[in-house]
Image 1 (cartoon, rainbow, N blue to C red):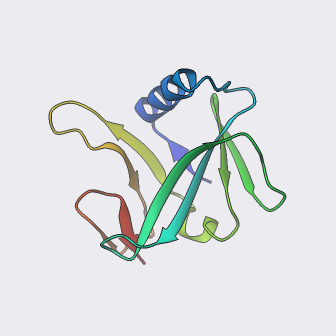
Image 2: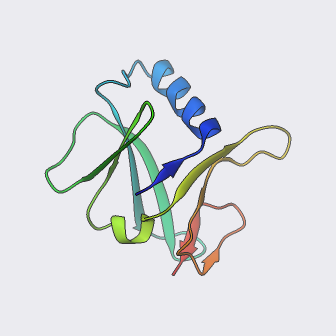
Image 3: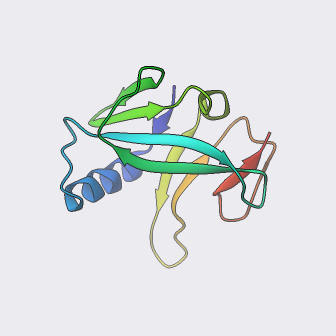
Length: 109
């Protein structure tokens, strides 16, 4: 399971609307890739297609996809959103991460 904070959900829905995407047929894709200052970087994107091996979750109005290779790294993660003067934008809280970078965009296990 993955989680999205209320503030992050509102921002995602706003961005989807700006992009002309419907929350009824579009997905938020969570993923990871090698790289970043801590070893593994988070990926977050919109997608219109669910692949056969994707894990699917729904939280309120948001449909979430995670590819099978990324899921072990992201199980239990929470997507947060912060704005304001010191806001980070989107960032992740990962209970499995042993080390995270200052910007919250990469981690190591």
